[in-house]
Length: 291
Ligand SMILES: [Zn+2]
Image (cartoon, rainbow, N blue to C red):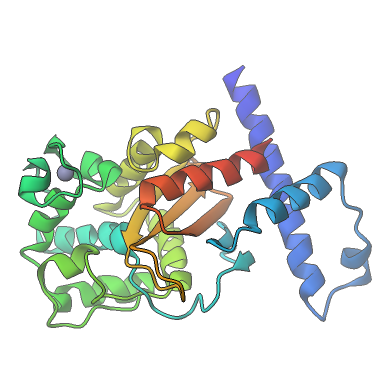
């Protein structure tokens, strides 16, 4: 039953994908007559209406990619090429730089909550890289980044197409705190597609398992709760707001759907909320796409 539902969900996501491709194609001057006259199904028409409705909110920015071709299918994100702070979205790449320097062995760490520098008041307790990624534990990643400098992160950033941190940067700035390491949202979205492409490489599987766990019961649970029959890979982030009317922070979410063979990558930014809350919005959007 579940697998049937899942297949139906995938089919619908696929329809959405073709729909977005069609929309994208229609914006291109070189469109063929065939593309221009391709009939839209009732489903695709309603998906367009739903998307338009969901994304009318000026507080939501989004990038939608075809996960296989890496083509940007649809977007509404002003200056998506301009580097900004993206908070914890950098954590998997920081972790990989650490892994490179430590024979691909990730540490375990005991989070004592706020007293050990976590965003959560209550302790996360003992964590490995998988649970630390799922919970986006700042205490874990502070400890991990403490032994790194910006220079060590440059090769990883280059490999994934991320804007690199300055070589002399150290400590918390390297795991997404503050505004010193800035990355273009377009580059970040593509870096996650690259992360998935490298899923068989050392150190990557743990991070993807952490993203799967995030969707189930971590900071990305807003996505997992909404898409009950489709596993997803999710990473959230919270960073200082860069909007004209500033809020204390903006929430970011990267979601690869479905988890076992991603068809789409949705990256969103929600004005004025934390990453976990933005995941609820991402879940709502993906759920409508699935319906
Ligand atoms: Zn923690």
